[in-house]
Image 1 (cartoon, rainbow, N blue to C red):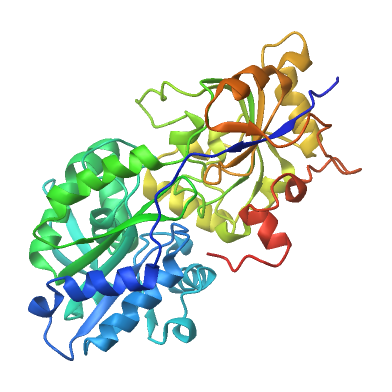
Image 2 (cartoon, helix red, strand yellow):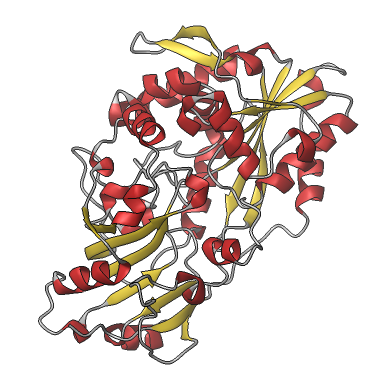
Length: 435
């Protein structure tokens, strides 16, 4: 079977950005009501998660330095629920991958999994909360506001979710997730309201990213305003997030899945597949055949999201850390996404099977799109069947002519050549520090 040739396309949509990250973070903290909530010399738990926020090392360091400048005693606390295998060492390793260490931050980094029970949720389950954060004099959370990968609601991924699930550790995350969509849409906001009123939550810095994965805006969220402000920030984030520019795709090949790209491994808002029990998929894009080739090193063997794909490689499945994968999936209670698809020995065979089963008689007519991952969507490679749509799109432009898909002699796709500026490409070139 002949493969269609592919050409590189640049997706360029004008993006807002924050020009001075450290200065912005410092100004927001200084202008906040933090001094009214925490006495001088008080301890402040600075919550950081595991979502792969591009600017998190810069934001965290600026926050820590500003808190020190104000006379507080900050420390970093892991706020990532059950990630990292739900053990202290795994969560410490994840934070270190984002350059958040005692050495880089200049403060203690606490990843203990100990919790305290601070109350009961509306359904009668205990509300768990990180012990280190609970015993601090104040809590400052650093998190991205972004459309969630599992549901739509007033509060999706954001500061409130970090407070409830991130600082809930494994038990807290499980108590919300075990009720499925009801837990996320109803229980999470109710538990969040309880925690805002009954813990030392003092400030949130909400990061909104543009389609290039850089901060478009950072907003200080006070406890009194979080329920009004965060839904508006979510709408803003939804409008800015990167998406695929096509409504229908015969074959979509994703180079890498990973927790650093999406909490779901691959972002459903991008691939159009929700795969949540009892819920329909999104209206667009409609993807006939979805393949994924590899898992990022930053996922540390957690291949959650593999079930979105129809086809994958034996290489990807072999990277699985069974314990980390199983714990995350069972805690999240989204089992559809954990099913292992058909596996094949090489990337070339995955391409062949995907094109052969995409319901096109002539393989050269297949509407094929290749992307690095579901976060970095500035560069895509497309087949000739999409040429007319690319040329008609105001924010798309061809950067190369059509050429053969670059497979090695062993049948491995040369992702580093196709996507040199991606996380994988920079990692291979030694220019990626892991955040």
